[in-house]
Length: 511
Image (cartoon, rainbow, N blue to C red; front, side, top):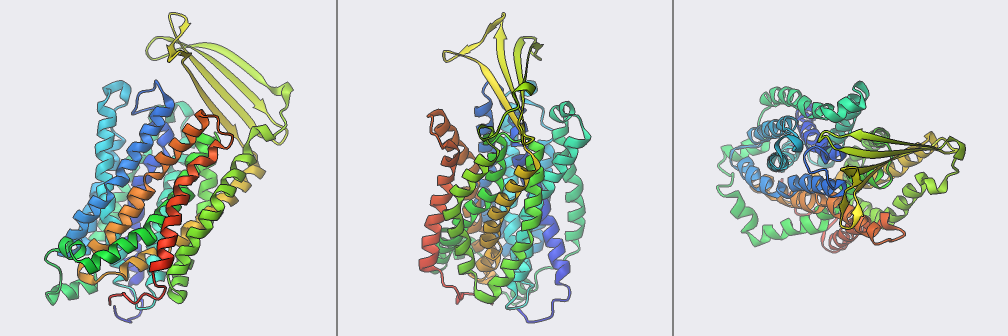
């Protein structure tokens, strides 16, 4: 690392950040559209099982990220940072575009979820190689003493990618009718990614190799076997494990709780209108995103450890009170119903399979401006309700449209969670880069990052949703809080390990 001026580093930041942001956009539109996708690529007989299957497929993309980290990390340490993350960009963009082209389950049966799973795995492999390359590339351009600040710009890309995915989906919903969006419009965000990937590829094509890596390569100091040197060396492996269990594991669950679980919780548990959730989450992300840079900058001044550990501790202590407040704020049980405005409509509707469904639509209004709609669909066969496991097969869809006051209350509660995210995530790239030497940095930092985020973080939506669903079936009065035990326990373990074994002033930084 040189102490040269920052002239030119903004070009490095913008090129790296744009590509990484687009890859996150590609990765997250699947999660943002999970509720819709569950009805397209999975059997519709059991909506809950279909949604859980969609989350499991979403999680599969995270589970393979460590393998992508190993494969592309090795390439990055052998041939260079630049060419490796150009390959990951094209792989991610192609897989995303193709997901938008897959026919529905009704058209091609089980081939639909199988093809989606394969493409999600390719996305996960690509993302496994992308982040480490971008973070390493930026860090190796940054002046000494400013790594936290400059790499924090890369940290904003995941949140910005999620924000853009929400905005594209919201715009598509507003342009099309609900019927058009449900039928084919949900594919548009997937198709648009190919344009953004093309632009990013042209920008990255003109970038230079990292000066630190280029110098090491010219001096013959690059690794000939990055995997062996990273994980076969006991001394280096100790730092890989410390990075995982003391930092990225906890950071991963805090990241996904504060953004993705919050979104799924509001849409599925609280039944809030999908467009309202996307909008309020987008506002919270806009307000919170600058804090990634703030905490990255602060970590250059006071060290990485206490900022990251502080974010984990706040999450551990406050998640349950925050989610309890979120749920209670919009629960119609706490609102006064305008009984005279309640309507119930019953109708028979022919399905695509030429059978009949009996549909009961209940609309309610409340004094504070909240509206409630419940659609119960009883599936019929020969005029009689279909019985499954001794019960009539009934699908219930509830949609709550919240008032302005509740909307801002939820924005604030999500924003608080985003602050926890910025504390743990803002300094993490600089923290990881400083733990490992140049010749094996890409490989060594990528694995703990993607195990922590891909496995521990990526499994969170599916595991937590399962906990909530199971607790609800058992009649637990606060079932909606049960999903939080997973991030709380994982973050608590990481907090203890980090506080005991990580030093605040990193004496293991490799220049």
